[in-house]
Image: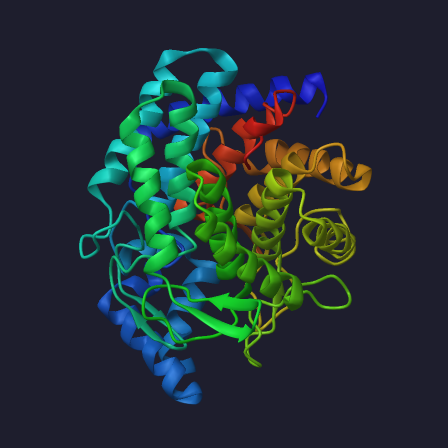
Length: 407
């Protein structure tokens, strides 16, 4: 990132913070069409009977493609822990970049909210979605902790603890690690390999990004707290993630024989976890997988204009061309790997330029999707206003020590 582009990012972040102050910390969501009773029933029917279900979900699909503002007709504005965690990390990074104590206060405010919004039925600290999430394998109940959310919250508490040293944040981090160790199930696949469940009681096998998230969290916690058991559990999960990589360098969403799609942000999730693990352990297997994965990523997950495209292998017809979430994760991955792959460096800078040029609105927020016709400009904190905010904040710190480059 050039000095000129860094200045443009700072200006964009100032505008965004002003927008966030005005807009508030709740929003509609990517899942708003299906979070309410009407959408949930339609989606349940879709998974039970594809033909009749298509008719049931078609109004939501139409609105998603042509009337994204209609989300307000299906569900209310909510706040999501994964977004709060991203905002906390972003403001912590801004504080370290600028020294402005207002940014640190804002980060702490988000942590205090996270303390209040933890999953209430569990002894240890953990977080999920504040709505019933209908999936092909059944409905995951409100506040069920998800291993794809909780690690971000761990990182948020860690990012602020680095600044203020508050022992309460450390206590919560230890509790999160215990949850990841003991509450999430896993499925042994060999003597030294296992895949992780997505949530407590999950019976599905082979979701790659879930295993990658959990492997990273346990690896980091094993070093932080000197717990070898965390590291031993993580190693089995790492072996599964490495095993799941295909000969062309890609990772399917799952090794279950059905969800074999390859998309942009899940690919980034997996590679980010491996990069972080490699950084703190010098894991040779992770290093080789990253190199192979970056080659696939650059060749298959960008469109002709050099912008992130949603799928290399799509599971269904998509109603959009580009996704803000993909832009955020591209910038995150570029930040983590800054200087290691010149082609990735150039691609990430190109993506930042397009983001600032086309995606940020006059009010400071970002458009959510480039649709086939027009834009989805509904600001959604989880999808992905908070992710793009954090990615831009962290991109400013690539000149700092590597421990800061958490992405």
